[in-house]
Length: 136
Image 1: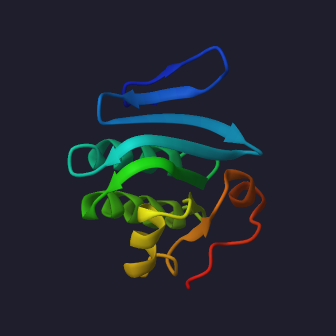
Image 2 (image 1 turned 90 degrees about the vertical axis):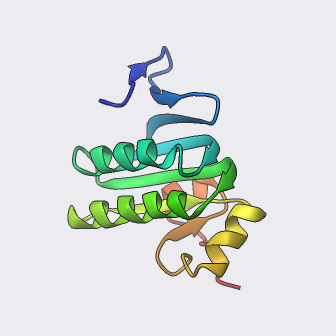
C-alpha cells in the first residue's frame, strides 16, 4: 500500500494510524477487510478514499469496510465510502459495510445508503453474504 503502509507479524496491513483514525487491512476468504477505528470525517476521509480506490484497482475487487469501531461519520466520510463503492463496481466488485446498531447505522438508514451498500451487522455475515441489515 502506498498510504503509510507496513505489515505486522499477523499479516495485517497497517495503512494509516493517527489520533483520529486507524485503518487495518487483512484478507478473509479472499475479501479485503478494512477495519476503521476512530472518526471518518473531513480530515480522515481522503486517506480512506485513497485506500479503497487503490484496493479496488488490484487483487480482489470485493471489499468490506468494518465501521463497528467508528465513533463519528460525516458527509465527507460517506462520500469516501460511496467513491470506493463506485470504483469497486467499475472493476466488477463491491464494497460491503459492517455496522452495529447505533449512530452509524442510523445515519446509513436516514441517508438511504442501505439501498446503495450491502450492510451487515457482523463481519462474519458480511464475508458470507449472510443476513443484511434491513431498511427498517
